[in-house]
Image 1 (cartoon, helix red, strand yellow):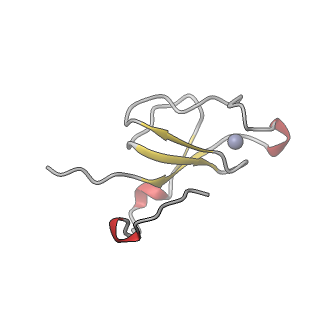
Image 2: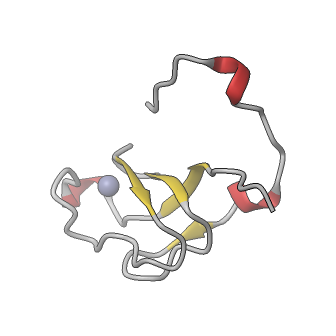
Length: 78
Ligand SMILES: [Zn+2]
């Protein structure tokens, strides 16, 4: 579960970017925090970097396949 303190700086969003699930070893389409939908492990990653593989260390294989889902992404000023 991702944590934060200053809630005035986070906003709930229904952006479709949060709906997709990405396979391990593929490029993250957005920078941000991603969550493994099987084990709940969370990672932070730069946009375009490669999402961790099936054997990311917190993931027990008995939990099933890893899928990464975007949890939080930063909004950068233009
Ligand atoms: Zn996992």
